[in-house]
Length: 612
Image 1 (cartoon, rainbow, N blue to C red):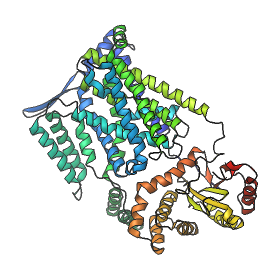
Image 2 (image 1 turned 45 degrees about the vertical axis):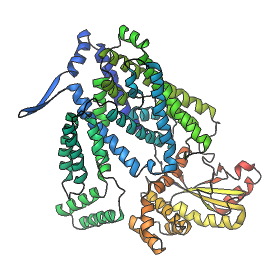
Image 3 (image 1 turned 120 degrees about the vertical axis):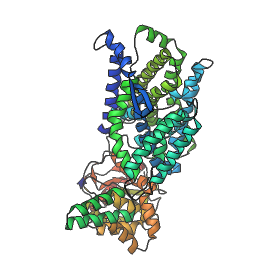
C-alpha cells in the first residue's frame, strides 16, 4: 500500500498570519493604554501615528500622516492581493461552477444584508446610521486562523466554502467603499485614474519588461485615485482585476520543458535565462504576483494596519460610553448575530430547497460554526470606521465594539463546533464511507442498483493500485450483476508527483465517455505520466484533443478530483488502495478471495453495509 499524507487544508499556514495580526492588535491596545510603560506612552501612540510624512517633487508634493500612509498607501497593496484573488476565483476557481458557487454566493449576500439591517435597527435616526458598512465584511486572515484553531481537524470543503464566501464578501465591501464612502470627486483626476487603468490593461501586450511598467503605472494610478476623491486603495483593486489570469497551456508547458532539457544538456547562462523566463511565463501574472505579495501583506502590511488602527483607549469612560452606545451595539449585533443568521440561515434554506451543491463534508453543522466565526470583522471593519465616522470619540466606541464582536464571534464559533462534535455519532475516523455513492456523479462499473458495492480510493501512480486492477476484475466476474464497483481519486501527490495530473486527465477522458479505457492505459503505463504522455494517450484513443485539453485545465475537473481527495482526508485515509465494502472500510489483504469473502459476509450484515 502506498502511503502519504494529503493536505488540502491550511493548517499552520493559516494560524501564523492570524497570530501575528492578533499580537499586533494586542500591542496597539497596550501601547494606546500605556499599560507597558507609563501615561505618556499612551499619548505617544496617537502622536506617533499622527506624525506627518512629506514627499515633494518640484512645486508639488504629498503630505500624509503615518496612519494615512498605512491606511491609504500600504493597504492598497492589501486590496491589490484581494483583487487578484477575486479575479482568479471568477476565472478559474469556485465561482466558475454555478451549482457550487450559488451556495457561498447566496450565503455571502445574506451575510451582508442581515448584519446591515440589524445595525440599522440599532442606529436608525442617529448620525451613525451611515456607518452600516462597518458590519458587512469578514476578516479572512482571522477567520482562517480561527478555523485552524477551533474548527474541525480536517475542515476540507468548509475551508473552501468560507474562502469563496470571503471573496464575495470582499467584492461587496470594496463596492461599498467606492460608492458609499466617496464624498467628492475631481473629474480630471478621475479621468487620469481610468487612463492609468487602461494603460495597465495594455501592458499585458508588451513582449518583455512588464514588471517595471506595472510598478510605475501602479504608483501613477494610485496618485490619480488619491487626487480624484475616490479612496486610493481602490486603485489596487482596479489594477488587480486587469491583471491576466489563465491556466497553464500545453504549448507553454512543453516549451518550458524543452528549454529545461536543453539547459540540462548544455548548461550556460543563456539557456538558464531562457528556461527560467519560459517557466515564469507559463504561469499567469496573477498567480505570480499573488505569490510574491501575499507574504508581505500577511506578515507586514496587515500587522502594521492593526498596530496603527486598533489602539483604542479602554478606560472607564470609553467602555461606559460603548456599553450605552447604539453604534457599538449595532456593530456587535450586526457582526455576531447578523453574520451567523445571514450565512447559516441562507445555507439552511438552500439545503432545504435542494438548490446548489454543498460538496463532501459540508454539513449545516459545520457551516454554522463557520458562520459564527465570520463575525470576526476586524480589518475592513476598522478600515471603514475611519471612512464612515469622523468623531474620534465615536470612532473609539466603534473600535471597542469591533474588538468585542471579534472575541464574541470566536467564542461562539468555538461553542458551535464543540456542540457539532458531540452531536455527531462517535464513529472512529475512516471506518464509514464519508459520502454515499451517487451513480450520477461517481464512476460506477456494474448495475447502479446492484445489491453489493465495492468502493476503491486509488492513485494512478500507485503500483499497488495497478496490481489491484486484476483483483477487481476477478471480483467483478465472480459477482456479475450483483456488484457495482466504484472508483474514487486519492492522489498521493507528495510521493507521486504525477498523480493529480493523471486523475485530472482521466476525468477529462470521462467527459468523452472513455474513463475506463483511459484509466486502464494509465495503470499499464505508470512510468509514463508526464503531461506529454497524458496527451499522447488521449490522442491515440481518438479523443477530441481541443476539448480534452480544455477539460483537463477546467475548474470543474480540478474540483472533481479535489472532492474525492477531501473525502479521503475527512476519513483520515493514509494510503492506496483503500477499499470500502458497502459503507464500511475493509481492513487487511485485498486479494480477490479476501474481497469476495468480505462482500459475501456483507450480505448478512444489514443493508447499511451493502449499499451506501
